[in-house]
Image 1 (tube, one colour):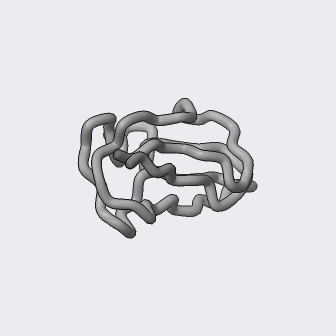
Image 2 (cartoon, helix red, strand yellow):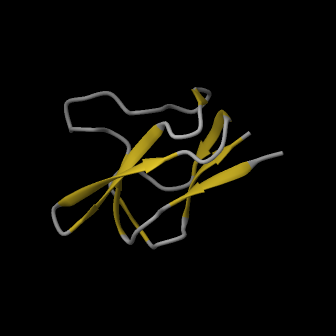
Image 3 (cartoon, helix red, strand yellow):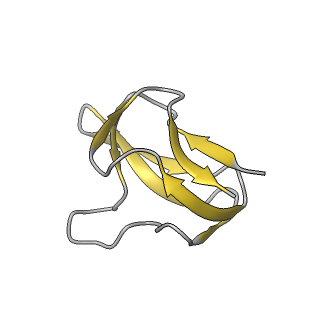
Length: 78
């Protein structure tokens, strides 16, 4: 059964820790509970987005550097 990882805050979603770094996770990667899958930036402050599910990343529902709202699904996990 698929679950979703949601944004804890409104802001901008980043899949990478820095522009010159690889993404935290890619589609098909496994993810564990508590593992960082991205960042949400709010007014120059970056907040880690962690997984509350275990499984495999099926899809990113938001583009890198895309705007997000609190509670908005970011990632689908199978």
